[in-house]
Length: 319
Image 1 (tube, one colour):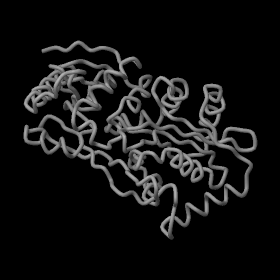
Image 2 (cartoon, rainbow, N blue to C red):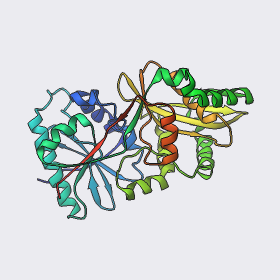
Image 3 (cartoon, one colour):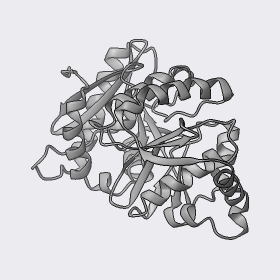
Image 4 (cartoon, rainbow, N blue to C red):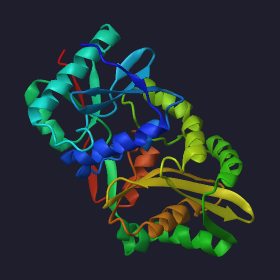
């Protein structure tokens, strides 16, 4: 049965939020991608659409005329009772068949960002599973206090920056956009590996997102208010030298969506991360998303001692 695909707009955030919070799993999983903003910010790189299947809200992404789902079906409709598991099974079958028909066999239909709890159920329906990069989850208090020898190097870097510079931290304003974009382009030239939130798991899409990271940053810097993002900038000697944005995933988990810090300033990245975490201490846990399989990013994230690596899976039709 064909579906009516609607182009994803920022106004659809409310519907997505209602469905995410209405389904029991949406309130439990700490996966960063179970939110609206980490998908919407790639709207100029991937085509995004949504459709409804028997009360389930279904998000689709398109690249090179091929569809995949960056989230499993979520729901139910606002105000309705949660559908029975059987109806989710039917929704899976419906969207898989729809993607197969649209993709014309060029690639297997797939649904990404499936938490471990849901995988255990969906696997019994006969779908194949592969692992995605795990999210990094930390205790916020660990990142704020940086106690003991485990955080010795991070404390030293933080203190080195604090002693050497005149600086201030301020909430991001739209007036800061051009300064942040200029910093982003300098940062690209400084970095060998650009870290971006992962939506698509294929190597092709990951390479595309690395190349087009500037597009996602421009959307965040322009539409942060509409997306409900918290942004902070660090001014050093009168210029913007770092910025970060994040969003609450739940009442307990805050996600760091993106961070940029001038690499020529020693300790600035550590200062930005610690101060941002200090400001969101009402959330017991911080999710810094994945390392995208980049070794240098993995080393940095592991050095902050995650309390949990959150498993993440892709479901596809069995070959």
